[in-house]
Length: 92
Image: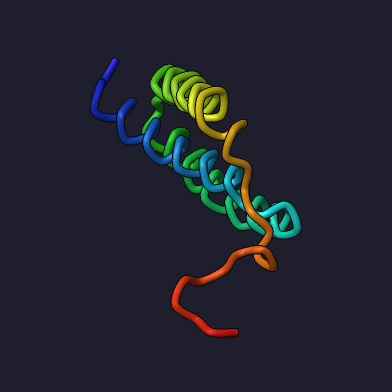
């Protein structure tokens, strides 16, 4: 098992899951559709390089790390609605 490929795939899958997790609820479907394109590229890379075991390991670790992030940080700091975000220094 090549640890470099596990790290590469784990990082790319982890970023995809993190972006979907932290997307605004109104835009989550749109973001998920865009991230499906990235996941398709990862799938094609996996089949082309024949690194199925590395991809499965990377998927497991990416899901585990995203779950841990959600458990300790994401539950207590939910994604804000874009209408509720205020920029400091503006006088509206």
